[in-house]
Length: 122
Length: 110
Image (cartoon, rainbow over all chains, first blue to last red; front, side):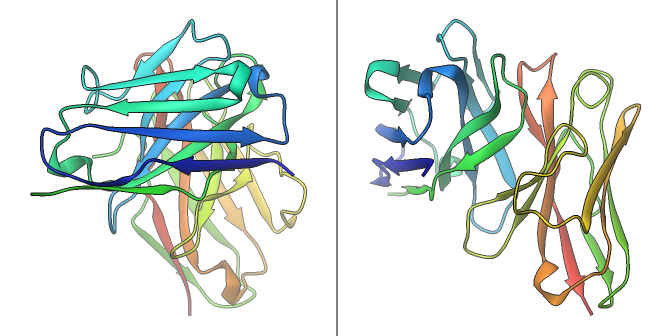
């Protein structure tokens, strides 16, 4: 079974940091680009960041660029999101997601984790 | 607002055919394939269609997709009450070097 399991969410004060992790299983992790997507309460889906299979190509949404860092460890089948200088507007449910195609990211996601909640509040 | 434009809401009666549009630009839909997702309340999104009109295994053939130029659409035929959900389109954007989503369409089955 293909699985993505996120962890590391929680309550943090504005300006604080969190590191999200995503453990992947059931597929060849290093064949695929991986994404972080978030969803604020009652809002739509928002792309956060993408990393290619070999970590050569990385992209960030303007809203998080310079504050968040995506990384992956193919040996550990894991994806990470280091979130610094957190703001109230970063409060959301964060999903780890697998690109549907082998190779360059396509924007299509066929596997989603169950998500982890990040709440930024004093 | 979202890079891809979807109508905020759509509705239909059981058995009807409903379409949801998704409008973008040359750097996203015009250059890349489109995927569609269904999200039920309190759950993670589920992939409905990828590569414009391909269905993953397990998705009924009532769901179909198309793309023309910088626009795409999702069609649901034989509407069922269980289809009531939020639907999102998405694609890669070459200018932004990232995934872009539509704002979502809430489908109501009357």
